[in-house]
Length: 143
Image (cartoon, rainbow, N blue to C red; front, side):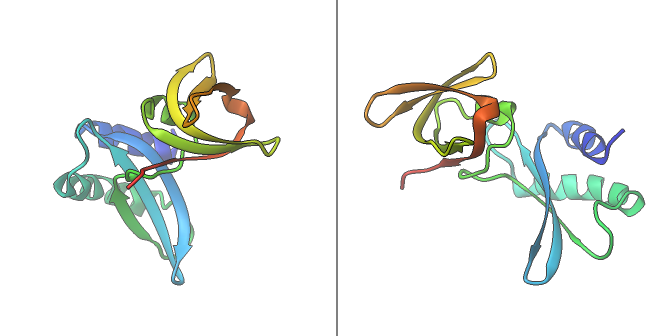
């Protein structure tokens, strides 16, 4: 079993879904971030509960060598889309993405079928793009 699959089982045991895990450096600190989702959003109490579940696992199976800080949070309203499932969860939301061919798309996710993403642009155009051709993507919120 992988660390990510173990974390997934733990967060699912308290009614959350694992969205993503990431290791990054911020202000000379290493952070292991676990992003979780739930219908209706994620509360601070749920993040604390998930932290208490995950922390002992990381004591046995550290995600990185050396010191790090564990953060458990919601991925937020504006978040990176890395998997086909991330796109499926974002149907109805605004996204911006680029492809390996340097094309850029901006619009609302209409559907995710057969490993293809269909979006509708602000101009009303519909584009269907194979997921495997997307190099970078994120949701955004118009304030």
